[in-house]
Image (cartoon, rainbow, N blue to C red):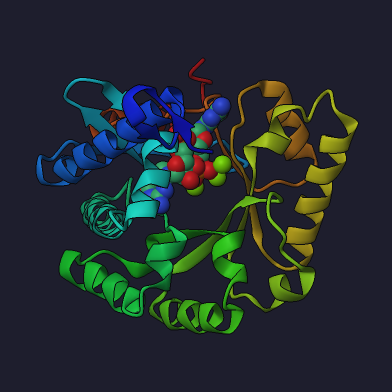
Length: 289
Ligand code: C2E
Ligand code: MG
Ligand code: MG
Ligand code: MG
């Protein structure tokens, strides 16, 4: 609604909205420079299996802003997606993850670890997405079977046929797929059984209250049972307490990710943690908090 300010000036928004739009434009501009100025960082959050052994990591993007400090992806990923900046950013993440996989492949105690990369809808929809992934793998020399791409239900459900085709091409190379934030979208079971997925990742919002909300407990049990009956691996994200871990474990969840085990951290810290876990070899992991 247009508002008339003094002296015939017309303002289309209230000052709050105006300020928000300006802040957003400002941030978008900063984000453009972030790519060139090497302010983006890859953090790694370790994932563990039923024996408490590290089995992989998810790459999570961080933005070290010169004035604002660490900006969380919840703030800048939506902006990047709205402005197409997600394309160069997403490619950079993919390349970085592949380089890391290649480096791990050279070290016996790290060679079996996989790395999961979040792929945004816009990125996946690029006609040359398959080629970009192939190229990132080829250039880095990463073992393709250790690369896992995390898609969300919204990515998968638009243009299902095209999605299945792309996934099939990448799977032929060995790349694996996880359905991220599972349970928050509208996946129909019809599609779910046709998609060439390897893993379901239970949304952390369901995990949070698993031990005191019987509805969430029921939802999580159903997701695990469904995943297993479709032959998929099931991983829970946002595992923060031993009680959540115990519940998930009892109900057949295969893998776990969350602050209980490790926070997202820079690669050198993640590798130190892996080294520590490895030297307490086969003993149960020590919860880091
Ligand atoms: P996501 O893929 O669902 O990632 C999980 C989020 O949960 C991460 O937030 C992670 O730091 C957080 N998390 C992990 N363990 C726990 C826990 O125990 N408790 C709680 N409360 N949170 C936990 P983060 O790093 O802020 O990332 C948020 C979202 O941003 C991600 O959600 C993902 O959708 C997106 N994102 C991050 N990196 C990338 C990227 O490289 N590309 C794209 N397209 N999206 C990304
Ligand atoms: Mg994810
Ligand atoms: Mg997730
Ligand atoms: Mg999530």
